[in-house]
Image 1 (tube, rainbow, N blue to C red):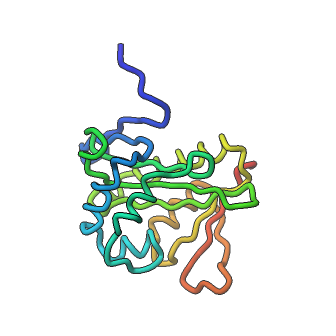
Image 2: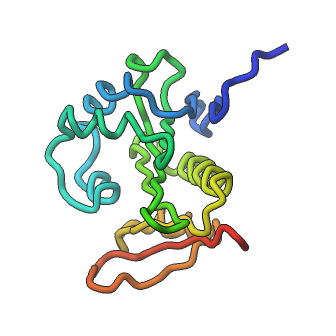
Image 3: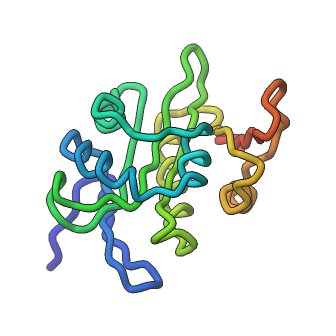
Length: 178
């Protein structure tokens, strides 16, 4: 008999054979996330943060790793090791948009494990969380050069909307009531 995992935890094996644990982000993940930031290519950083960042400061890493449980949800895909020791390969988060029934998402999958279905798995979990919160829409801003993310959003039923005053950005919106 296998031991049941806590909510939002899932062991997965990527097509490459690499085993990962998808789980809620933990404060102990700040160090590994900050440490692995230097492994990200400039394009990965721009796709996730929509700007160029030279470093992820300790303060930024701490903030990322301590989501407000009332308004934010964040998952990591990590090596199946204790938090603080595990290398983090992906981060997915959703945050409630104040005074709406919407959430904004962001996903970053390291290029070392990209293209193996992990972004889809993480996005499906963000959608499940948003539906559980009884929200109307899950949405995000995606650089128009980030074709893999736009194709993923399309395949999951997100609709593209132009973003006024933000050239180069595409708004993708999923109606959670359909």
